[in-house]
Length: 382
Ligand SMILES: Cc1ncc(COP(=O)(O)O)c(C=O)c1O
Image (cartoon, rainbow, N blue to C red):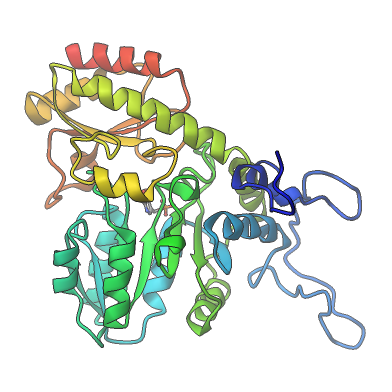
């Protein structure tokens, strides 16, 4: 029953794209606006609020408003990729700012942070953020401006206590930013736990169909720092195309169905893999044996996500051989699409990676989980 005057629940907001309809035609899908420029009023004003498409695009309004509603934030922006979203935050920090980032997280961003620090713009310390003591030791009160965490984090799916991390960041005078790509707002809303910024690689679950590269940022407050991020998107030019913004919204409308299905299947697959003789370990926050399970159970709602990793008995060669034998799972990088992907993660990260060489990362899609288990079983059994 609809609660008196209560707003619709998040799954309803997503399915209906906030219920927006086109005022001109009544269309239940908002039009794609490809224009790069807009007419000035005769008196030289831009009263309709649009001037040039690098600054803004009407096609951003609906996905941004929906994401803001789902995350419970003050405002959101869509950008050209997850990396564009993340790096915009780091580039907006004042010269010499100290940053604490997670030791094992999405490797592409970790590498970029190292290279950005090497230019002298920021200084960085990497900490095992799944330990709040390690995080507390790494922040420098008065100097740390940003604490960056990812939870659950690639590719060990380690879990960070967001509320604990927020308290540590704030006590030091820093902001807490959370890469919530793997959790999605369906399972975790970091702002509710005290985070200041949420970032998504929208390439993954938000779009969900492996056909758009996009990123998002959502802020707890519309403050000057947030305004500097919004300005940087337009001025730096990391903008999303009109068609991509449309596809992103279309993907978001099925977000709740896809994430619920992927999470339930991942739980089932994790349990099956735990009992498999050719699997040495299963890394999935939904398993009581996972070190982050208790925290995940507190801050994730409705499931533990569609991402897990397995460590194959027999080491690196056995892991690569198993990945070579899958038929339904696709051997590919990325995650969060409707089709299931498997990846030997150390191969893509290369020398110096902290990822165990026997690890296969699994992105569970929305297929029948029994088919996925059968395929893995065949591949692992050789
Ligand atoms: C957790 C996470 N964060 C950020 C990124 C970067 O996003 P994008 O590839 O959209 O730039 C990725 C991409 O793999 C990711 O998995």
